[in-house]
Image (cartoon, rainbow, N blue to C red; front, side, top):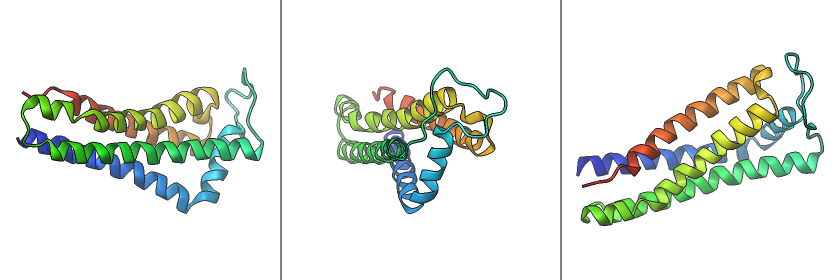
Length: 162
């Protein structure tokens, strides 16, 4: 039973992390926009000044990218929160019932991985070469930390309960 409570607590923290970052982005919308515009615009790239693809410098596309990031964070957090609700409701159920209740918790973790590994790591890091600037590099480090932590939580929660 203690393992079930631990899984529930970890998913609570995933939900809090996602929703808190989304809310911070909304609270600092102008700064978030400036950062995304800088990263998407591939500004100040000295190591690899050329890219195989174009930079994104138009405001509507930058706003669209920021919107996708924020909505992804909120969606992951809300899915994880629904997962917490389901896990809590099934905490005393037989193993099959608790295992079946993990769907939204895992979807929330997966959504968070899509944001911090997919959007920040694969797109921001690889395509937009964020690693070339101090702010971009710090964001990639943070995104890696979140993705690694959430990935571990996802694996732990997904472990079958017997």
